Amino acid sequence: MQTLLKLALLSMIALLTFGCAQNYYNIPRESYERKVRVLGVAPIFTDGDSDIRHPEREALTALVKDFNRKNDPELVARLKDTGVYLSVRMPEGDADQLFSSLFFRRERRSDAGVIYNKYFYKQQELKELIDKNSVDAIMLVVVSGLTRPDKLYSSNYLAFLDTDYNFLTITAQILDAEGNILWEYPNFQKRILSLTPLLNLQFADFDEAEANVTDKVDVKFKTIPGIARALGKTTSSSVQKDAKVSKLYGPIFDEMVSMLKPEFKFPWEKSSEVKAEQTRTEPQPYVPVAPKPQPKVERVEPAKVKLKQADPEPEAVTADPVPPAPGEIATETLK
Image (cartoon, rainbow, N blue to C red; front, top):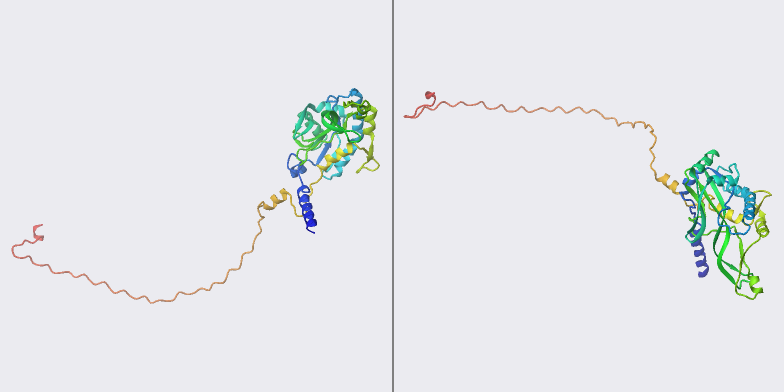
């Protein structure tokens, strides 16, 4: 019984720790939701000049562009389904032309153990795109090549090869007209940081090493037809009727959208803005108040008091002059 109680207590603690809402934006969530009511979503870009090491680079780039175009509607539909925005729309224009006009530079980054390509865009062109399409902010998604360490296991999991592999990855940003990054993926507001790759372009050939009875395992690139089959595996859309989404794009879209959904709150929780509103003292409107009736005061006549006459002052007594003594001269006579 005690064990069950402990497990229940631990479950409640875990729910409170990990189930509580978290802000995945670079600004307060309430500020973002007020600022971005209409979101633009550019067609998914392909950075063909990034670190793509496949020997058939041009064919691979063309293939990725085609699958980006096929999966664009799914991302837009999932963002609409969040209910965060009044409208989600895709601006007109070709993906390559938009990327060429907006792209400023890329930077390979390693932040908190996450290796990814960070993109920087021309502010004036970005502002013009946002103003032209009458949106509050725009989401820019890029598929690019990236080489980073990883560990691949053999089919029987008895061997592995830990080395650098060449990947296709997806990164994204939501920017306003001033070029401020309001939200980004990979997202560094998460408790557990990660970046799910779109596809590993290489594989470790354990079978060849075993066939040749050697410990040296070669790393090889997958073929273009093989990559096309991997990207082409689909599943039913969760938001579009009779639509399909790539099994490789879908989980990444899920991860992005999960950080753009409305904030979950327990019933007893209130947002910081609601709390601030409740504590803010607002001036009260003037309401005229009827005067209170005053108590009737009866006039009291002062009592007539007979004043006592003061005794008249005694009259001054004038003394008779004293005659001078013999031999003295009177003072008056000397004047």
